[in-house]
Length: 165
Figure 1 (cartoon, rainbow, N blue to C red):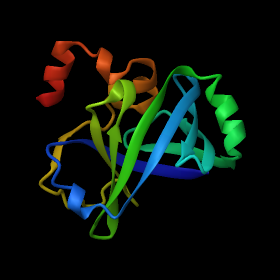
Figure 2: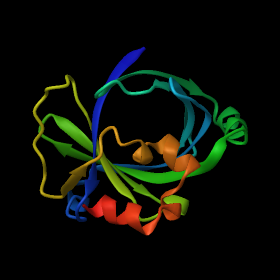
Figure 3: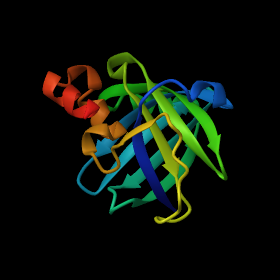
Figure 4: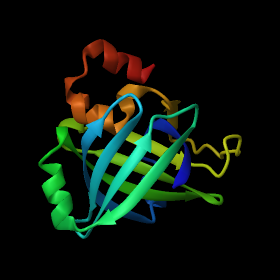
């Protein structure tokens, strides 16, 4: 078991792209989501797969249990999903001793770009690049599990305006 401490932000522009040192294609689906935890299956670059159980966040922290599984089993689990398959390309952008993970969504979540940064402690200082926008940490509609059930393409105009605010 590990403890995950992360913050999430919207992206204000594409100026992060030249600093990206790698990327991977991710397909993920949720086979269980409730008030206490989510169960996710993820396939990365069609080469590796994981089964992950995450507790619902308490402030910035949550428990995370992650296990490698065969890709064929992951494909079978995806067929048991709730909602859609969340598709994205994850880019890694180093910043000081940390790294930003920039998720560029596609499919029914096309147009959404989110930056996450995992921290060693809750109060750890962050150097915010100019391309970081509004903080969305703890906003449930931006959780991948929420995007699987209610994709970005289905958001109302008022929700999209709120996103820009």
